[in-house]
Length: 262
Ligand code: NAP
Image 1 (cartoon, rainbow, N blue to C red):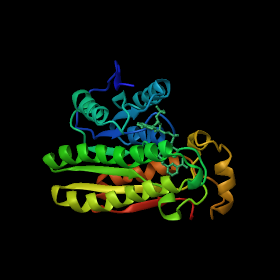
Image 2 (image 1 turned 120 degrees about the vertical axis):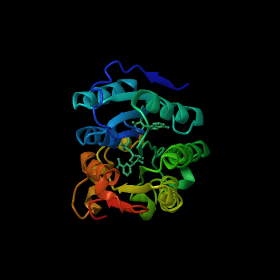
Image 3 (image 1 turned 60 degrees about the vertical axis):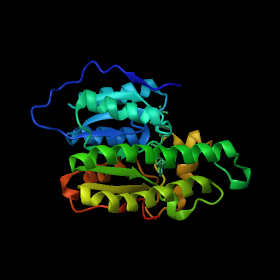
């Protein structure tokens, strides 16, 4: 599927003062959509990347615009270099220089032990969660370091430290790579004025669990969570907004865990 840009006829309001321009990958649904809505409320203009669900993307983009932000939605598979370039080019052309990136789009593949996981699934999970994050980080690093400012937030997972035995060790490994790229890039880009952090959610109520073939997973896993329940996407969004804000101006290279104590 080739990348495409969903027309964004109502890019209002026109900014009188510079507003942050933030790219949220996987902004159509789940945690990404909650982040987009929170960032819109906190004064960001937004470009939402998505994989294929144009209806969900336009619905979220409409809610973002209703909150007073400018917003475009771009279909862009983050594992595809050309699509990632289009995502950032569109953001820049429609909204101006990108000041923030939320690397959020992710997939787990079907739940199960590694011995039963096919190679195609392993490849895709690594392509999206590792290569895709790196492609987005690389473009942001080039643009932001040239301007001497910017902030990146990578959405990792508590799986990175729990290991997820019997569920998706490959996904946990990919998210551990996200933590490593966060620490390394923070050091690499700090001298250029660019901050890089991560947020590691625990089990959060989104459609990702049904997509992995286990819609009952949040309720089941909640028994092992000290706070006794799954999280909601909005409970992740506030930390992302803070990490992008000037309140976090001395925070870089950190992973903020939002996992109910797990
Ligand atoms: P979700 O509800 O399944 O939504 C996934 C989002 O990513 C959708 O917007 C989807 O677009 C997009 N997407 C998927 N593959 C993509 C690709 N190759 N290129 C571009 N966009 C792609 O997932 P979620 O639960 O909100 O998860 C968001 C992030 O949080 C992921 O990185 C996930 O690993 C992480 N996370 C989730 C949980 C949890 O319990 N939910 C816990 C820890 C970490 P379409 O709408 O077009 O399909």
